[in-house]
Image 1: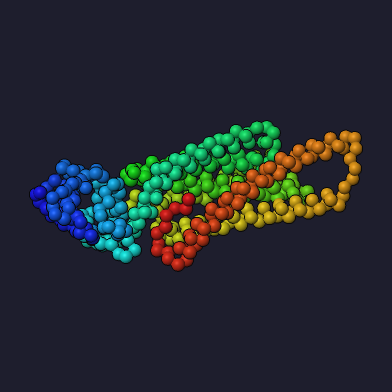
Image 2: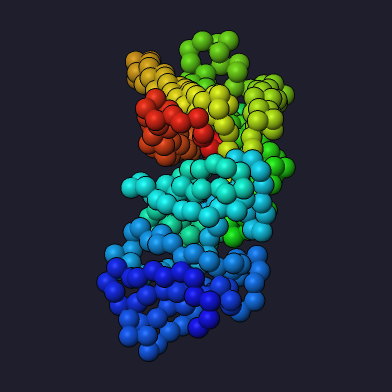
Length: 388
């Protein structure tokens, strides 16, 4: 081997690694130097993920692998972008020194910019592997099943017999926005996972704005559905007027859409790209955290739970009144009672579907919201990712 410029020993001393600057590659040797093979790089220089350029120094960056071996099954850029340099804090230019702290954060000395940068990275190979598996296999499965489920909802709820129930109109609108969340949110995440160069300013602005708006529209459609069922069971005549399909179609649904197309406009203005990640910084990061805590983690589940409990309370009161006033039904009144029972059965089915969505949302949001609240109160550092 020629031009050997870096040497690292394995923790268990079974292997050692050499950087060969002449061929731009890293070679693994057995401790007796009788066997070797290339673990990174090729003979030619380049800026592709599988190529190296000016391999002058090999630094031991193994943190969570007990044997201390070099993992090269997949290549991931953790700082900077492919073949680019910059003079701001987002990228490094001529980094020539690396170090890790006990938490796994990366520190790089930037020769050209006369600075030392700190980068928070994922240090657990197990978590990284799980994230890779979920992205490659879990997300496509979620997208497929989710799209099929929402298309089925749209097909069923579009039928005339179900459209006449005001609550179903909110479910229908929610299904359309859920399709956008799956296609714009998860599908793009899968696409850019191995394509960090695709994470641009425009990508972050459009994707985060649409996902944020669609998620909030979907959540508040379910809240409107909860209030609709509460109003239907109310003894207040004026409140029951809210349950008309015309109110849902021409007033409530358009209002929810307009409001939540306006609220997340800040994502179009303040979101930036840092280390191939869509990020908010400084006071915008704090605002985004507060926004996530209040408008995602607190308000929706609180309103859903409140209206659901009030609905069950009203149903219990109506049931007690029916038991107190029971009269024999004869003639045409019997046919009317049968129709009322059919309508009640439909309402019960709609209520059951609504309760399933409410329980699912609250159970999946509570832990994440509590974690976001804890992080904001105790360890806010001025940088926060977007809420999704």
